[in-house]
Length: 242
Image (cartoon, rainbow, N blue to C red; front, side, top):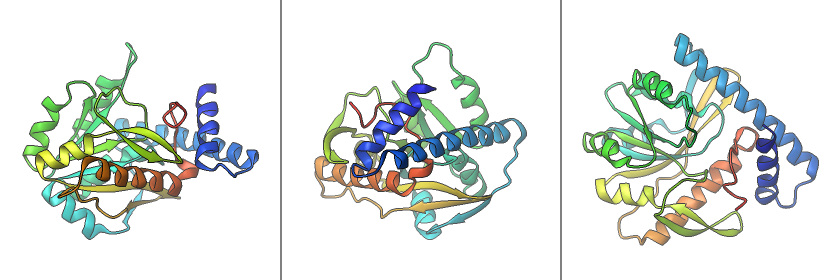
């Protein structure tokens, strides 16, 4: 648990370089509270199908249009982000959603996690040979959720400018958008009381764009989503530190 606090506190020094230490400490504590709440919400959803939230969309027409055709949805680890699967099931019951999941430990809850989310039309896919499962979802009009605010075991990356430093980001959004002709839409979840809000940033076009230029826009979207959700953003690794 201690590594979470140190990673998060140090990451905030990069995100908010002019902030005071006590502000970073407070945001770190708030983030940990958000992690605990998220875990409780997910357990209630998976084991008891308990979902007491009212759902609001910042721009539902934009989300509707993207998911109707199938889309690559970019997001970050903020708020009770796993409950988007329930939102997806409720508002888009005829569509399928795929989500990548990275688990490096030999003992993992991944099989259980995967089985429960499958009930809501969500295919949780382990990173590593994931295209075999992603392809049928996207070929049949489904959508893909990608989390880029984490260290991922991938080889295909693009150098981008992110939080004041050049970093490597996965080129997965560019590859999937070009291969399947999909819209790329940054989307994130926030919570106030028992109201969940689904926010969107402008879609990122991939037509007639180089990979580098496209990925730089992706980096800007990731940066904005993190900044917009700092009290509930969850830094689980050294994504910004290495």
